Length: 66
Image 1 (cartoon, rainbow, N blue to C red):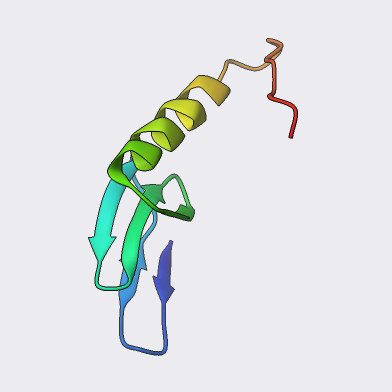
Image 2: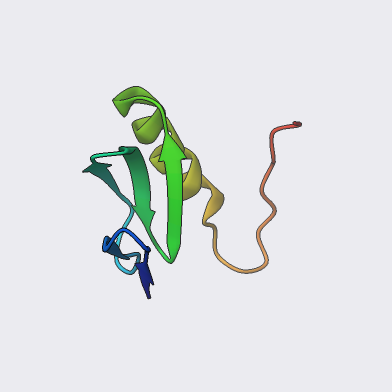
């Protein structure tokens, strides 16, 4: 899936989770998602969190309370 923005930027959100640095900020992109983050550490933490959340069907996972 590709997102197209009015400023001419297009972002392909398919593929594995990864960091993307654009003029307007840092993002985690992949698996159909585009998530803004503030720092490289936050991006790495978000990628790790998303990878942990992916479990085989039928398994229970624990979610952090918000």
